[in-house]
Length: 355
Ligand SMILES: *Cc1c(COP(=O)(O)O)cnc(C)c1O
Image (cartoon, rainbow, N blue to C red; front, top):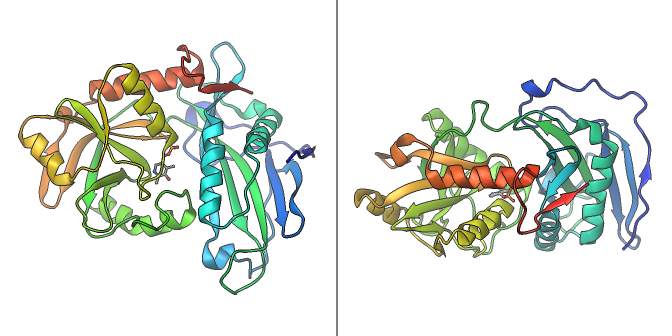
């Protein structure tokens, strides 16, 4: 599937924000990418146009039954100029798997990456050049058919927007407080836990608000069946350094296969650290803590890269992890991954792509 991308330049570009004041996801660039799908025609009309609201029929099925998927990745100003993407082929592959789960027609993976590159090229000036900043890329697909029956839509829009973002932690890497959620769950076997879909996020808001009200920044999700197996932390994957190994939940359908997770596992293995992708319970985590064998907990995801956990609370019991400080593995992983992303460190795995 080869598409020509038609480019219409924005004739009234916006003023760029001061890169030292950037937050997350509230500023957008001058252009967006669009691709339409219609049954019988396939994906068509690839174009880059000025960033603007889109018109939707109020009956568009995404508004009623949430047939929607999204992705998230970042592009970085490279050391010595140029712009780098981190493993965009993995986002393309994950999009294909999410689309399959959601009955959205597939998009050619090579074209998907080409579309991201073409949009970045047009908005190249928007990639911020300030420590810790990047340009966040949000590809997403919505079902657009005006029809209230429940079945897959026969028309879609694939859209990519860009947002310059600041460092996740304004004052540098910092430990977070995490609430172990044992009432609400995120995913069940056979559900959509392994797909990156908006619906999963809508379902997670209630627990997030509960954690915030109790003074915690995120939740640790337990499995939907027995509420004892550790799954994910908020919208990131979870790692536990305990009993001399690093444990993370396996990709068995209920957790999101994070690209940062995959990168963390590869680096840990490079460093000779034993990684166990096996089910384990929150009880085992507390047991390791009581035995003095829980050294660190951290989360991994595109937004924060690595997020060390300083406190866990499960039911009435709070435990302090790594003395409430940043663990050494967390710091090393953060430095290594952000170093590779910006081109400061060698990229032995061939993860970065120049745009
Ligand atoms: C996106 C996401 C992650 C992290 O994936 P990355 O590819 O590392 O950004 C983890 N969990 C959930 C639920 C997510 O949506």
